[in-house]
Every structure is written in C-alpha cells, then in structure tokens.
Length: 199
Image 1 (tube, helix red, strand yellow):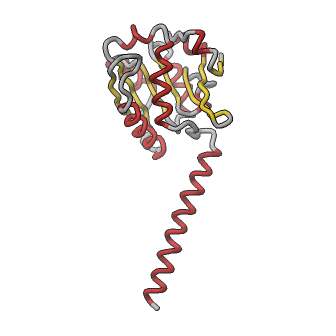
Image 2: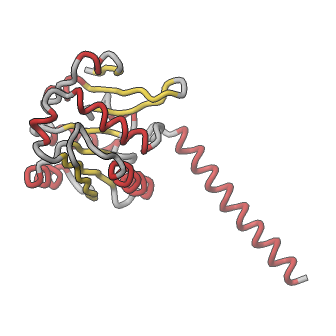
Image 3: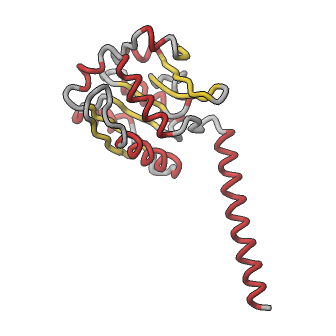
C-alpha cells in the first residue's frame, strides 16, 4: 500500500512538472518576446547576411568579435545566450573571417558602451527579455560602428538593426534602416529586398 501511494504521488509530481513545462512553452510562444526562429538557424543567417554589409570587413578587421548579451534575472535569456554562443562557435567563418564569441551579463547602457569601446565588437546579439532596455541600448549603440542583432522580432521596430521573425513557417529577416545608418551598417540592395524594412 505504501509503495503504491508513493508511486501515485511520484506520478502526480511528474505530471505536474510536465504540465508546467508545457504551459510555460505555450506562454512563451504566445509572448511578444518569443524567440521564434531556431537559434542555430539564426547563427547561420547572421554569418550569411553580414557578407552583404558593405562596411563589415572594415569593422571586423582580421577577426570578427561577437558579444552575446544576457540578463542575470532571466533564465530564458541566459539559456538563449549560451545556445547562441555554441551555435556561432559551430559556424566555420563569419564573412570569411575567423571569429570569437563572448557572453556578457547586461546591467546598463553605460557599462555596455565602455565594454564596446574597450573590445571593438563587430556584432552584438540580444536574446529574449530585453524589451524594457531596447531604447537605452539603441541610444548607447548609436555612437558605435557595429551591428546589433535581436533574436526577438519586436526589437527591430524599437531600434535594433537586424532581427528575425517567422512568417508562414519560414524565417524572415527584419532591418531598421534608420538605426542601421547610425551604426554604419550598409546592406546591399540584394539583401534588403529579402528583408522587412522599418525606418
């Protein structure tokens, strides 16, 4: 009898955890901050699309440096950042250049600016959880020659230069042209015609 009760309690516990995970997944899918395009595919698209930025080679120099931001208080943000670092590490070259990826726990625009000045990043990637901070990040990065990339579609209308959405089950590139100009990103026409453009 005791074993049966314990087994039933254990089964109920597993079911509760499973249902909680499913509910969380569904909530994320319905959230405006969801990462809709798989991280590995995002990494591949980043490596391909920067080739079409006329200023990328000069910006990157001999080696492309990528900064991947996460938020300490957001588990999903940390998970996505770690996944992106792994995914980019598996990409042989970015714009025909070797590359390095660094993780950084975001605190404020000033600290991010100081890090960018010291390290000379060509790309900064933001995963989920940054919606309240996008305006500050956009303003801070307006003085830099770099490409900001958002894993969440809603970041681009708010001023992140490049992002990803899912349209009819297919990935769609998004670009904020006004912010791109401020950050000296100059995509060729053949790339822009494949993107959804915000200004």
